[in-house]
Length: 472
Image 1: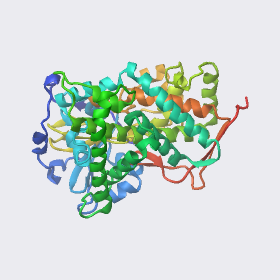
Image 2 (image 1 turned 30 degrees about the vertical axis):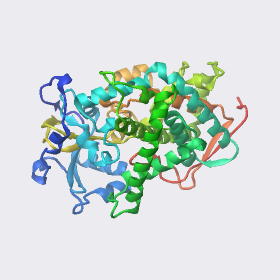
Image 3 (image 1 turned 90 degrees about the vertical axis):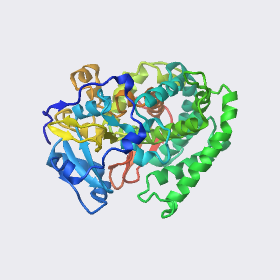
Image 4 (image 1 turned 60 degrees about the vertical axis):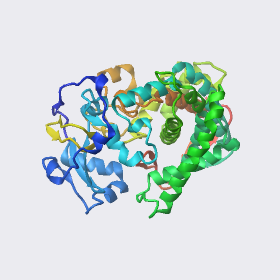
């Protein structure tokens, strides 16, 4: 692997309170041409599509090859654009913390996300992002999480109880669970009460978001996705008045109660964009993380028993109490699971000014990004990085490591808004699985993972979650 001993520099800090990247200004940034990044090593690949076929075949293997061959800064060409990838803890800090206001989230994510989530936090920058994040953050305050816990704890218990009745496809069942959680926790409706229709529309929309051909005139998948988006927006718009009149514990109700600095209720469009995107972010990342947790609990029995020892020492009757119980081993196990299988492997940005990193100049207008999944596997940061070892996340180990070596939830002002919300769900999920008598999996084609756009099993993995008291 390449050495990351290079210097990272950036422009002088700007006034953080005045960061504001107007979208038209980002759109006016120059399109990067081959000569603009000729000094950066990398690969072009095929005409127009570039390296896309190779990268999609195995995203992690492609990133590892590029890193080993070119080092922590490399370029590639894909779908008409030059991209520059930055690898390492220092790169994560520079891009994610972004002290200088040099990177635009809208410029990075916009081409992929904006057609479906034009008002989402993910595609906002500067003060616009700060204002929206502060307002939406009210729905995720610690004093609000208690109301959500009871909802998703019931969903988790029902799901795992049903798994104990037979053999299940782990990833498919986890997806059903996280969709159920999304419907009940975010929308305030069960799948039987109308949530299934909302989830179906959402699934069609996400299919179009990830389609290679995204023109509704050329792709039936894209056409269905845009139609489903319009229907989902209509469904949610019809619910806003009802939600504003209620004091429900679901996130949709909470967001409908929010007001801006002038005391005005949020516009319908902003509420709808925010809820749909939060639903998407929560479902996809949690499906990835929960699948990894279930598989590692089965394949790492020594560490599963280590968790059970901790659980035996903590007493609580209500499953939702696992979210706030003193269970540090569970937190370490979960972090190690998402270190190896980062739910969001790449974070995209676009430079709004020239940036220097590891001795390379990245010109303004460059679509760039950091790769937490690969950084989580660098031997200079992680001893024996492919092995599973939750002790990497003891307080002492974390203090000794670069604070941006581990970045599964992003960082800085764009750090995942639902971080604590997700961690609490993970604790309840792990606790419920650990109370099974046994956890076994069967993977005839082996266990391998596909890392785009979220980490998921490449082949079918079946699981058996046996009910009854554990044998000590």
